[in-house]
Length: 136
Image (cartoon, rainbow, N blue to C red; front, top):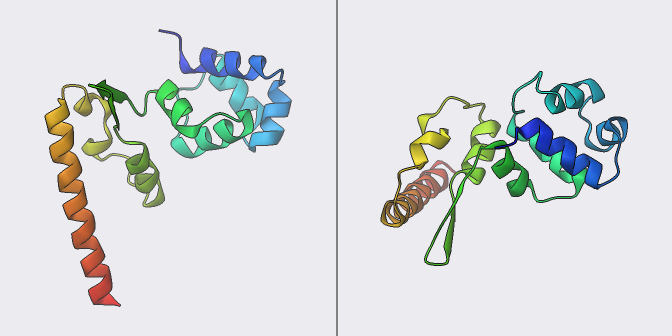
């Protein structure tokens, strides 16, 4: 599998952008982009990936998947996005080390497991909404 940096370079070149142009459009330094593309820096944080995706005019989720942060599980035509929204929320709260966000923890989940998780998250969300309304 090709590294994230090589894939980023391919995407940039397909759009006929120089490193400096991508830096200008994204707000990510040219040196940072160069280090990513040359494998001298690992996969960037989701916030940086968002800037790069916007500048490259590609879906954020696509670049997050390329980076290995999310994996789309497809079974029987149903697609489950395993973590993109959670990653964004965790970034907001600066919670980078939650085991829930570890890609490896999602690999062995079946469709049934994902449906149960979805129901549990819906329950948690409803409970959080109730607490928020009670605090108001």
